[in-house]
Length: 294
Image 1 (cartoon, helix red, strand yellow):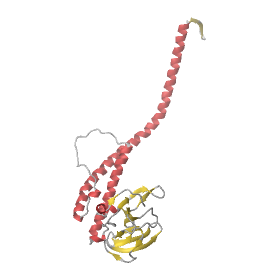
Image 2 (cartoon, one colour; image 1 turned 90 degrees about the vertical axis):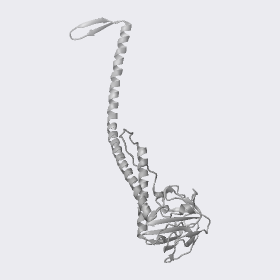
Image 3 (tube, one colour; image 1 turned 30 degrees about the vertical axis):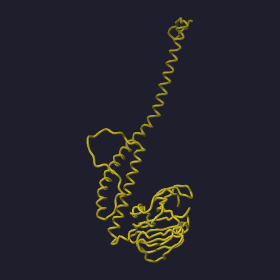
Image 4 (cartoon, one colour; image 1 turned 45 degrees about the vertical axis):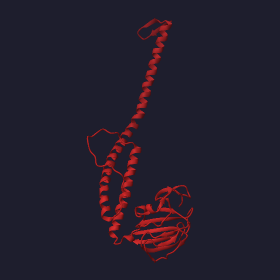
């Protein structure tokens, strides 16, 4: 085959055989593919670079927060020792508030792995729970030091026997199936089971409530109150003084309830507290269970 190359200065004829022509076309095709790949790579690079520029600051933020988390954990370890001292002075059992922590350690600096989002969230949540426990611990210690008599603190179990059926905190509502915050603890038992005052106090409420059913509220002073809900029968009247351990109601299933049980609350300045932080003997006198009720 003859190919004629023409320019403004000269014209020249070149003879190409079939093999030479095929190799030339393959070479041109290869150059085209290489050029296209280069353009595609450049385009991808332009798309990736902005994303990486966003990842780097986020990684730096997580690393900085991880340092703060380490400082928080160190402070919580020191609070362990302080809590034990407070417990010794006030007679409060601090074991439920403390979690096993390793002793202070040191050594050569090593290059460790960076925290991922899941691990960071888990550690932060655990530290937050411990901080909440310490707040409960020191609030109780403050109340005990301020109270001249131990029987004014709601530390008695409201039932002598029964099954703990629901804990304090987030749970699935038995009526709606949605996550709701349960502001007390529940105990199941036969209808008519005696319900006792957790501490000495004054009856401030003894009547039917749309959701709590037949309910009693006791004022123990120092901002502390306790509630006993869903009773079948109320045995005290508003204004009455009751003693610690006195029977104030009989267990029932009135109000918003799925079955016979006692809903027991402790509040400090109208804010719901975990009753097990106060009722020191509840776990010994009442067996735990996972029965569902409200």
